[in-house]
Structures are given as structure tokens and as C-alpha cells.
Image 1 (cartoon, rainbow, N blue to C red):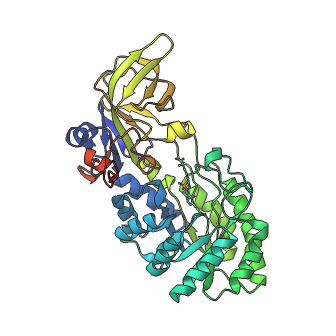
Image 2 (image 1 turned 45 degrees about the vertical axis):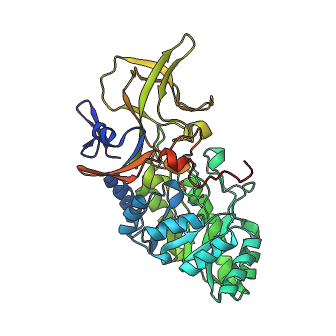
Image 3 (image 1 turned 135 degrees about the horizontal axis):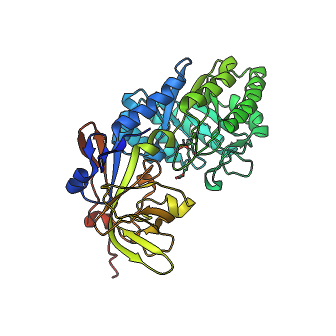
Length: 417
Ligand code: LLP
């Protein structure tokens, strides 16, 4: 459920007319509903209320400071994958003891920054990374908390680009080799073993792959106990899907119930790294119809938002619902909704029956809160769009639209030109 609904023929974000936001901020614009963000966080948090747990929001899904702050205010931590994400989370006021750091390619300076900031733990993704973190921690005279990210070889049955828990993936340490890495870690002077981690993929619409992964992890946890390693944390990653179109992902409560059932005898503090589930349906991208082209072969609705603003359709062929901001179109037509970018892959909607949009119509692209703005770029020298957060009958810009000057910021003409 989200708070982008019609009042009469007009689309609202909570109690604010989208039209009013565009009149003030311009188009295209990302709009987030604070009530929806809060609702989604609470649903996840409540699903695990009966056990010690921390919801470490996955910053990559939407890293705006206001979005982070919203979750931090509700008691959330963060899952980060770069020094940049750590910087953002700290700027938003996160408790460093609620930060977990994942990712296969952590640099020395990033490791150092994270240790100095006092994060909870690193999710270790390779043997060499473990050595590196031990070394850097030693240099700083500190101990680094770690969990090993195990690759359980489970198929999450999602898009291949967002499948991470199969043996052939670059992520994590093969489950059969995890014990020996823990044994190595046990002997390292500057490593504190705190947990075990897995993240098997994104946009999962079933609980069973999570359960299969946990079953494999449990055996490992027992093996570790036999070695005298008693873990404190079990990090189950993110990945719970959302409804974009006709998917029927489990509700957080059902996801929670299955996971609790499977993990209860372990008595570990659970960590979660949800991204999409918290923000996906809490945001929309609004664009304006510039032109329509009705051809013999195809119909095109050309909008001012493109693949640089919302890359998911171009990258994954993903579905985003389309809604008119004012319902005053004359019938429907089958069309592509395309952007201004000079690439044939620049579409937001392909061959779909949509309202018969006309020039000047505002169009909402739904479910754009996750991996929308964060994956946007300046391709074709297009300034990145503004972001707005709505709360009740109020709205504020939470990121200014970039200017032309922003586009060339940091560029320099060399002396030899
Ligand atoms: N934890 C780790 C280690 C991850 O790699 C990810 C996502 C998450 C948590 C959060 O997963 P979520 O709860 O959002 O499913 N750009 C793609 C999604 C890439 C996901 C990358 N990792 C998309 O737009 O669908």
C-alpha cells in the first residue's frame, strides 16, 4: 500500500496534489511519501518485534539524506557498500553501531574510514578481503567486527542481473569454504567474529528461497559452535520483493513469520538489509508529455524523463505502472513511452495500453522509489532531477534539481588547449 491515490480525477501524494508540486518544482521530479516510507519500515520492524533485530536499510536503493533520516528516526541502521554511502548515513545521523558494510570491492581508504567511524561489522566477501581488513585494523590499532557473507547456492528465481546467491555469482564466500575462513579469522589479532551473512538476490516474490538459504546457514552455525565460535548476529540481507505489476510478494508479516520459525532455535540477533521493500512503492517519478507520434507501426509518447532518470526499464526491461496526473484523456492506446535520450533503449514503457496522453499531460511512473534516482546519471548532459518529500499536506524539496553549472563542475580545460 502507498499514498499515491486519486482524489476525484487528480493524483495526489498524501494530501498534496502532484500538479501543485510540479508547478513549484518543475518536471521531471521524484516524489516520495513520508507516510509510506514510515509504514513500510514499521511493517518490517514489527514482523520481527518478538526477537532482537535491527533493520539496516540498504542505502543503495535510495540514498537521499531525508530518506535515510526518516528510517534512522524510526530506529533503523544501514547497510552500506561504499565509503560514499557511509558518509551519507553518518551525515543523516546514523548510529555507527547499526552500520553493516557489504560489497565485494572495498578499498583500503574505505575500510579505514569504516573502522575509524566505529561501524558494527564488515560483511566479508572474499579470503583476501579478510586479510586486508585485519591488516588495516592492525595498522589503526583497532579490532574490526566481521561476518562472513556466505554464498548458499540458492536460486532466488528473480532477474539474472539481481541474482546474487548462486555459486556462479561474484558475491560472498562459497558455503563449503566458509568454515575454513572462519578458522582463519579466529586466529587473526585484529578481527572480531560477530556473525554470518547472506543476501541471495533482489525482488524475491517467494519466501522459500530465503528459508532454503537459512537451512544451509544453520548447519554452518552449528559447525562454528563446534569450533568454539559463538556468533551474535545472523544477517539475512535484503531482497523481499514488491508489487510493480501483477507480482504477489509475501507481506513482511508472512516473510517474518517464516524466518522466525526457521531461526528461533538459534537465538541470534537478526539483521536485515531491505532496500526496495521499504522505498520502492514510496516513490514515483513524474514527467511531462512533450510530444506524441502516432505512427503506422507504433505509437510513441515522448516525455521529458528518460533512461538517465529511471534506468530500470532500459536495464532490466522492468515494469513501472503509468498513471495520468489528471484523468482527462480521451480513451487509451497501445504505445511506448520514451525519453529524449539518443538511444533506442530509452523507454520507460514498452507496447502497453495506456491513457491517450496529449501534449502537456503529466505522467506518473509508479514504484520508482527504489533504484530510481540512485541509478540516474547525467547522460546526454541532462541535469539530474529534483527530489521532493511529501508529509501530509506539506512538501519540501529534498534535493535541488541540478543546474547547467553542476554539469561541468570539476571539469578543467588543460593548459595545452
Ligand atoms: N544487501 C545487499 C548485500 C545487496 O546487494 C542488496 C541489493 C540489498 C541488501 C538490498 O536488496 P533489496 O532489498 O533492495 O532487494 N538495481 C536493481 C537492484 C539491485 C540490487 C542490488 N543489491 C534493480 O533496480 O532492480
